[in-house]
Image (cartoon, rainbow, N blue to C red; front, side, top):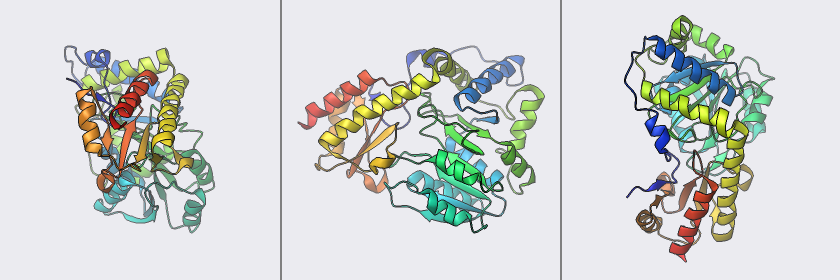
Length: 355
């Protein structure tokens, strides 16, 4: 029996989306690819409210995290860490031999803009890295306000990990002064894993042009060269997934509607948040709650593993806590193509199991 995925990635993939990948193969240097890529990029720019250059990479989101580290850091960067995946990004920069400092927050806490400004006002940094939505803790950080503050520091690039928020929460790239924002498609886009996307500003592209030791596969200008030439990827891409992304974006942009999609995610988050207040507690600071995933503090000391085992018999699965938060928390994802009615069903089943 298939277990419906209420985990923060991979998320549930609908049958019509899976069918969109089933077609006779064509070459990545053929006109069909140019037409497909052009369609995807146009819709991604609408989703992200941007005119910036779009990168589509056959990789995980982690690949484009490394791309940002390699292409965007000139001399020294500030990583703002508040959970597992922001920790990963700073580890990636270190592995790329980049000079970085870390502004550390306790897991579950959100970022304070004044703390970042205190750091960047020293003039030490040319790049700031922030995780928008922290999947491990259920925290969403105020990237709009951070971007606004960084307008006073025009030489600093603002890089954002939006892996578990893009397509589930509003991100106005141009208005919010974001120079590089990345995501992978197996979360709020509700696609199978294996594809990552990003938007890079002119400032980011200029920084990349000067960057040394940025490698080959994730060089921003390799993507730009082949896009300018024929709207094609620089290397062989997973065209089936790109076609599914095109199909899904058509639904998001032209059928459900971008604003309606964000509204649905807020509605689902509200259902889970109300249930959490009634039955448990939040691990995240309530001022920073995510619209795509809720991290529930296990105040009742239930066995999350046993809960998931019983849910599996009923056709669903949620996530245990991440890393050292296992059994101390559990996570319910409300993202992608999941509906409010499905969230209500899940919460009802959990209530029935735990009494």
